[in-house]
Image 1 (cartoon, rainbow, N blue to C red):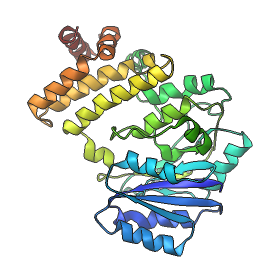
Image 2: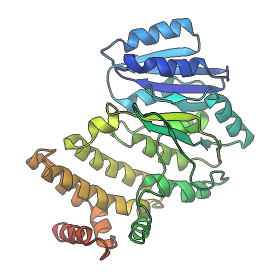
Image 3: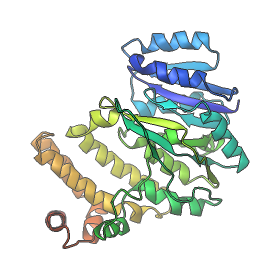
Image 4: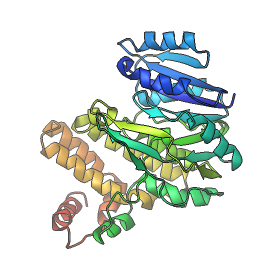
Length: 337
């Protein structure tokens, strides 16, 4: 089998029609679509069962509710295709998604493929295209890590200095979604690359980073193949603010440190700026009343006392153009010295 498309699902019965229509419209015939029902309590399971009975390419995996990372991991465990694609159940994608992704991977004998996508807010009239940033064809792991890992792994001190000089802080960043990529399943399995089930936000960017550490050849498709629809009911909106986001930032710090160790220390400088921005954001969440004061301050303190974060605070560049930020960083340096 050429390809496996993995779709994690949780209480999404009302939005499945669009995704199922995109699966049925694929111009590539040799693929399987694995829908993972992550303990839904609505009609998602019944809808998927009906769809699978009508189309032999569809498979349904069911499990108790464990979150999107566990659902994607269950899909990986069940996958049989040479190449792996991901989609979210509330998005849409081109009829040529699998055909063009597979063609690009095979043409360059690639381990990893990326493509542009279209994006809009739910209910908006039109999409806008989010293009690729920089060259995306590379034929060594060192090239891939240097050119793309820093765009996913976090903000470095160099990115902060460029921001001080007038560049938008997010100008260099890549969207970390796994739905804009194609992966070689043999490499995923050989290196046991999986989603970190302790992380609720940005788990897909970390999966991409872990995979990049193993990939040797990277390619791209020039045209958008995926429509990303920003929903107020999505995971990012649900988890923003509050104790869950504070805990997620601590888990992200742990995961980044683990990946840095796995890389032999190559990645540490890539996320030093993010450590400081995350600490400031955690403090803002607590002081704005979006998290209980006592527990929130305990989590902020745990983050700030981490040796990696303390080193990032000491090295964080300051600028007179941003006096409030400079004062905040100086205050945190004194608190966590």
